[in-house]
Structures are given as C-alpha cells and as structure tokens.
Length: 416
Image 1: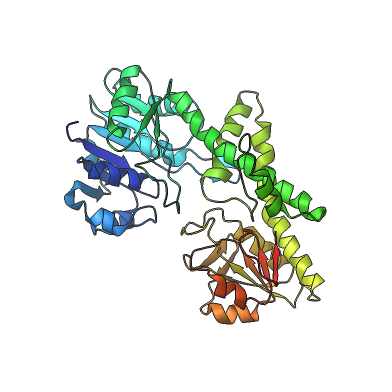
Image 2: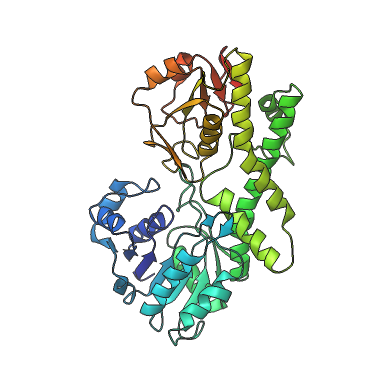
C-alpha cells in the first residue's frame, strides 16, 4: 500500500499507540491534540502516556509529528478520531467527541477518509457524527468516506497491543469499510463488521461482558465470605472444567475508562428508545458498591483485632491506580475506599510506584515518602493492586495485610 498522510485526532493513551503503529508501517502521521503539553512531549521524542514508550516515538523521527494546529488535518488522506467519551455523574458525555468532529469538519476535503475510534453507543457515527461532517457541504459516502473502528487498548497489558489485537471495522458503505480496512490492515488483522452500528455495538458488548462477569464474582465473593467459603479456591476449582467456564476474579472494584463507563452508553441509549439494559445496570451497581464493601470489611477486620476504626486505626492502601502496572487512576476503587475509611475516622495512608497520591472531589492523600516506615505504622495494609514492584518482602513487613487480589498467602494475611 502506498504511504499515506494520516491525521490522528487525540494522541492520548488510546490514540497514540495507533499513531505510532501506522507511522512504523511507513506512513506520515500527524497527531493533533488540543493539549499543547502533550504535543510538545511527543515532538521531543518522549511519551505522555504509558501505552507507548519514548523510545518508540523517538525511533520514528519525522514520520510522527504532533501539532495543536488543526490545519494539519486538511492535507491528510485519512483522519482518525480518538477523542475521549467520558461518563460524568452517571451521564454519557459526547461533547469531547463532537467537538473533535467539528474540528475535522472545518478541515474536511473531498476524497478524505474519516474513521471514528472513540467508544460510543450504536448510532453515534451515522446519527451524530455524519450530520456534523456534512455541514462542510460534502456528502458522506460520496465526497468523503466514513467508517467506525473502536480502539482496543488495554493499559498495562504487555501481552496484547495494536499489532496482535484484531481491529473491527464497519463503514457507511462497503467502499468506506474497505478503504478503512486497508488502512488498519497495515498494522494487524482486521474483522469486517456488517456496518458501523454493529462495530459500535461490538465494543460496548466486549466491555459489558467484562463488567457483568466481574460483578458476578464480586457478589459471589461477598456471599462466600458470609458463608465462610474461600472464593479464590472455589474459582480455581471451577476453572478446571475444560469447557463452559471462563475465570474472572473478584477485587476491590472496577476502574479506568472502559468497564465503569462504556456499558452506560448503551444503557442510556436503550432507555431513550424505551428499552432497558438491566444486566448492565445491575452489574454497574454491584461493581460500584464493591469498594464500600471492601472498606467495611477492613474496618471489621481491625475491630476483630481489637483496634477500633474511629480515631485509633491507621490503614495503608497499596496500589491506588485502577489496575496493576499502569499509571491510570481514573475511576480507581481506591478513592471510594479511602473516602469511606476517612469518614469512619481512620487515618489513611497510600503508596503507589506509579502515582504521586490519590485524589477525589474534596479530598487528596499524598503518597508516603517511605514505604517501610508506612508499613511499620499501619495497623492494616490493604493491597489493592499487585504492582510488580511489590515483592514478598513488602508483604512480610506488613503488620497485618488485607489482600484484595488473592495473590498473597502469609500468616498475617486476610484475603478478600
């Protein structure tokens, strides 16, 4: 395939890995972002996110350049849009995506291909994105091509990345789909969906599947605790069945952008059409309540050890990012756990090699400067994420350990 000029709108944790992969494939890639600091970091050969390394960016030289000037998009043959689609106070927020689309509209030229990569509810690309782009006077499917292909980035996962994770591609027309597929085929395997709505729905289904199954084992863990059953041993036993069972593990809660947020896009869209997505709603409620159940158990374990929570106990939270070996703290379950414990009168400390502290609306805890000292002070250490930096010596130094990961077995450890 002839080298292309490709514009990537949004060079964050999801957009930048694809930009790097396409530049590595021999294309000239321009990353556009409204965050000027992010632009400067990329142009200096460094990485502003943990899903791409600075070495990978520096090796590309001028094949990958970043800009805060949207005019760079006008000269591109392909424009990919990977803008955030957050959930604010339980409500999907499409303003960042539609703002990015409006920017593309102002630079749109005949013959260009526009692909939306942001996770969103089915019907967004043809129902909301297309009308904005056509405000340019160009007609989708005639004057320019339009497609949808959801990002599939898993921060902290060294096993799977852009190259070995298939892309799902759906187009407004077969020609739109095939042109987009040819772009992604440069960097990995492509699966052709029937249309854009099927591709949009596939991404929601992927994350709802995880949300529902995590909710299942989280609630199952609560029941097992109440009945005196070891949930970890139970799941290991069930996993010996060679068919009909996939292992999911309980924890302190779910976090990040995908699992807590993406299913809500379909929940709200279904409700707007008079339908209910009850499974996703229930799973969301269970996973949102899990951190509070964990915090309550920590308080009860303290009291069983003769230490009243209010005014007397010190608890150290280990690993406050939302998952192991990533810097991302978005929607981390550590925040509601810390807030609950503080409300109960507990002195809360935190440590994480990837984060300087833990913040939430109305509160913040700085990372302790000395982990050994904090372990010695804490009446209870709560392991939330098993970062690779936390070895056996860390757990051995804890006076008492509450393990939400099921990965530690010492005499002083209580597991979820």
